[in-house]
Length: 131
Picture (cartoon, rainbow, N blue to C red):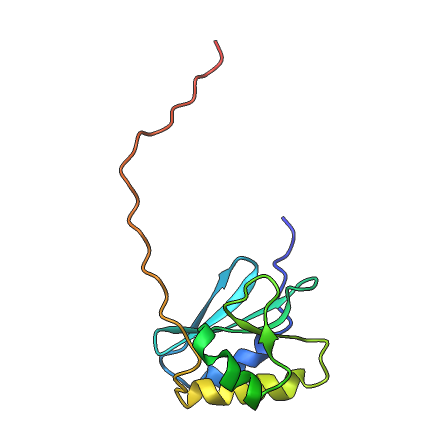
């Protein structure tokens, strides 16, 4: 079994280590930070356009966040979230600024995660064994 690949951008979440509400999980190849029960940031270090920082926010906050941090722009696939690729020269400064906003509970950052739907009781699949 190959070793687990560690996300090189996890250092961004170090700012949250002292926050007792912080936790993170892997989701679709990214690492996602939750603070105060809100999904706030996602980091992923794969090929473009999946190589950078995603800011979980709603469309109504895009303009103000992009005005404050012009290097942010809507993600080309997940347009509901803002994004900065790690190739941008301002990447580290933006990552640090966004983490400060998260820790300050800026209402523009973070979304309520959707509750998981309960699994339906269904038929169990049975495999026919060869005769």
